[in-house]
Length: 631
Ligand SMILES: CC/C=C\C/C=C\C/C=C\C/C=C\C/C=C\C/C=C\CCC(=O)SCCNC(=O)CCNC(=O)[C@H](O)C(C)(C)COP(=O)(O)OP(=O)(O)OC[C@H]1O[C@@H](n2cnc3c(N)ncnc32)[C@H](O)[C@@H]1OP(=O)(O)O
Ligand SMILES: Cc1cc2nc3c(=O)[nH]c(=O)nc-3n(C[C@H](O)[C@H](O)[C@H](O)COP(=O)(O)OP(=O)(O)OC[C@H]3O[C@@H](n4cnc5c(N)ncnc54)[C@H](O)[C@@H]3O)c2cc1C
Image 1 (tube, rainbow, N blue to C red):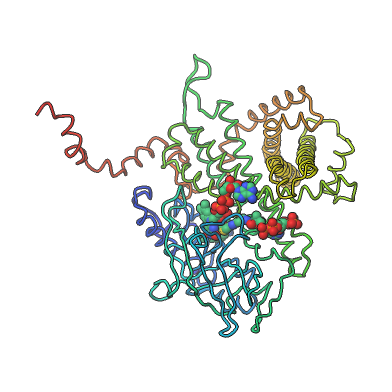
Image 2 (image 1 turned 90 degrees about the vertical axis):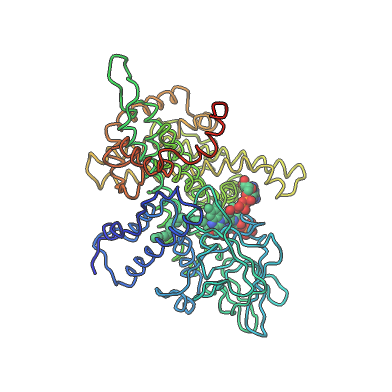
């Protein structure tokens, strides 16, 4: 059958709620979401097997984005689709993949890494997988409460299988973390298998349609061939065959960090669409007292809040794609046995995942604030987008922890520069900074990019000097590192910002040559706005580390305000161009037709508190108190 995925999915009635999801209980929310998740999964499987074929060109991205509207929250199978399958595809041997990656597989899986006691420091994971050569099995075991797995999405009620990160023991020797496939529930009855204690962890700030879970193993046995063996092997006699790089096991985290950047771009485009459209509809107070009330989008301070969100969505879309292509290239190299580019990719993925999630959550919140009181309504969808986005600051590598990973990379290059050793081209500016080869400040995108590089160099130098000073004062390296960690994270943050500015500007200039002149102008305005915004935000750092002057900063401010005015006439067009359907946006404030107040009233009428003219609590609790003296 040929289908247009949008229309096909939008027409499946069971996927769309009559009762808004916020009025459901914790249990009902899950049950409602799981019903929908399996309808979506069936469609994805049909697409995969070719039983249905698509006529539009953007699937599965289409399916992925429509699901935001279907769940108004998160698909409980997100980890099954996004991490379970992809980890098998990347880390299982060819034979394992042939066995496990069947489109009609009975396995519903999840990715089980974090424990009650350890999330960030994964070397501290306590779950063990001990090889028993007499039976050719691994014994999975949870030695204590802190070793209970805690958090994995879909684990609580849905998954019947999982990929478990555990410490591998062979003949008493620990070989570190490895990934194992374990069945945890019966495929037919769905009851936990003997030796498995599994359940759901309870309500969260968001992600409440996903049954995040806990899991403990009591000497649970799995075949030896259930260890993911593409990069590393345990042979029948217990021989351990080492991987070519000891962090290949962390590959799924690397891939998800890269993927997340684009997902966050999409979340930003939703928030921007809602807030900009609402700001075009909403009128509040005149600008001049003798004039009619103005669209709030005409207030320059409102433009300052919103246009950076539009621009940031483009930045993360462009940089997400750039990272995706780098990941593809590096993965191909790894297949050929060349690990050389892995450290750089890891360093970039860490800081960009950290900053994209932090920026996205701050900007979504800014959009909510920009919608005044109405932005606080769940029906605006901004609170849900915020709850979803802010979780990304923590999961898949906590913000500070990831910035400190990138800092290791920066410090290595600074050490080379300080010791006057050869540097790769992309760090040549470290040497310039040391030699005080400062460029004359230019108030242009290129000038700002150079300025941001000077900030990276200056902050890395400051962190490095502190580190050295701590070492000279007799501290051990790890302690000295901890003492310098505020400065180290500052250097990483600056590095991420300089990358974002440089990649976005260069890609925009290139793209501009391929599109119409009028479109090129708007794209360049957005890119310039992004650079100016951050130059002004970081003007203190620029004053410290570059040759910028007070006059230059004033000129930047004027140009920034000019850009706001230039973008204003295109603002609604720019968010319309994100092309997000009303059914996906799920917002009373952001719908295409602009019927904001009508939709708000329609949504309010769905409140169960409006079902009875007089709620029964009046008779039970209110009247006895308020009428007491009059009876
Ligand atoms: C219908 C639907 C359709 C489609 C859906 C499809 C796709 C979905 C799309 C988008 C995804 C959207 C959303 C995301 C989905 C779900 C998200 C929800 C939940 C998230 C799940 C999780 O959170 S899983 C758990 C994640 N946990 C972490 O991230 C833990 C963080 N900690 C660590 O990574 C590590 O502990 C560490 C890196 C901080 C430290 O590790 P370790 O102690 O072992 O390191 P050392 O100190 O010994 O050594 C550091 C050296 O190792 C190098 N290194 C570290 N990591 C890597 C790596 N990954 N790769 C390469 N190298 C690495 C590091 O550079 C150091 O090297 P040196 O040379 O400096 O020594
Ligand atoms: C919505 C959601 C979904 C999730 N889904 C999954 C999943 O599917 N599978 C899974 O395995 N896990 C999942 N997780 C767990 C997630 O990956 C971890 O919570 C995350 O990696 C952070 O680890 P943590 O909770 O141990 O935080 P902690 O490391 O305890 O962080 C607490 C604080 O300590 C600081 N800190 C910790 N270590 C250091 C350090 N070395 N230096 C400086 N500061 C430090 C942090 O910066 C932070 O401020 C999920 C989490 C959430 C919120």
